[in-house]
Image (spheres, one colour):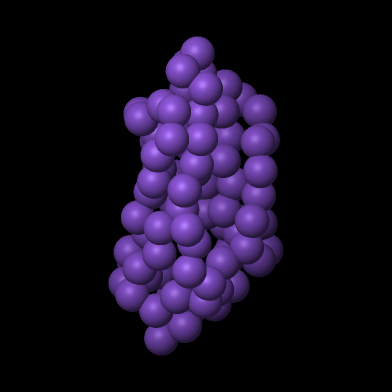
Length: 80
């Protein structure tokens, strides 16, 4: 349910098995520098709302990391 490109906010949907101990969604710029990390404490099906006002316009990568393993990486574009 990710709206791409987005202006004000976007929703990143995810699914984590109930036996997951620790998870984060991390946002990176296109140079691979981590911008922000959001701890995930809701397991099963969940959503994370990203506020576009906290980021500069541009292209970003976001990754879901669970129990130290990279699950998936996707791209998002923020326009102003």
